[in-house]
Picture 1 (tube, rainbow, N blue to C red):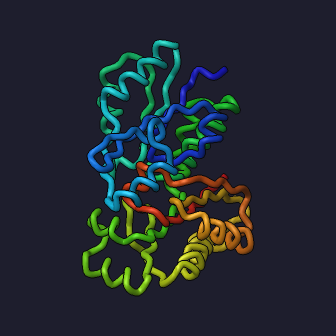
Picture 2 (cartoon, rainbow, N blue to C red):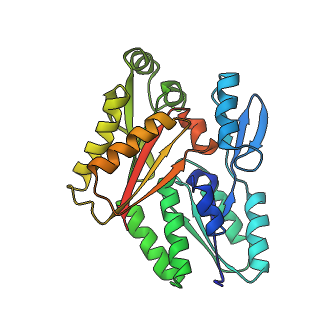
Picture 3 (cartoon, one colour):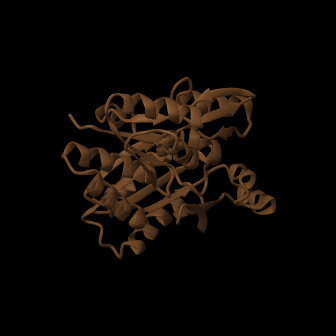
Length: 281
């Protein structure tokens, strides 16, 4: 058994089956809906979250994972004689990374904090890769080196269905959000250096999927046979299945992982979001 414990936060959207398979500790962010606080994944499931935001018709708030949370979890594994590798959601959009760094400085023991500079499965892909390498007996140095390679080269794209979420987050003006909603224009967003950037747009769901695939092909110059791909959705099974079908038809990738966008990310993107990420295996 490895003496390295791999930890992430709920921004990573690691599929439940892989969380169980690799015994990943997931530190939850706090989700606030209708003035009630929930812990992502602990007393709020994905299904419950999307049901609640429809029921109350409000945009949720999130609160970063705290020093107290990190201290309790880090100390638990350090007391077991474990080394810790915590892979965080992007430090440029959440204070969770900083909470972990402060905690690390207050504890004795080997704690590695890695900033994924990503969100959702853009971060989750790095978490799962670390788990795979840990099972293979790779050193922490080798694992971090591979994570740096993935972080520098991974492509993460997504399209948001409800533009009100982008408007509230300041990533879309009120006028553009109103016009976009009327014309069914969906922005195509990309993670770039830890930040969410609006890089394109498409009108209607069918063109969104086509645009996601064409951007992916262009980004990798059609050299994708050795790439892994992750696809995700936030309460949008219909478009998710269409995306998966199109990817299987048009992209000759090495391996696919499917996941769901949880409350920590969904609070900022809303229901209906679909996305993909691709990286070197």
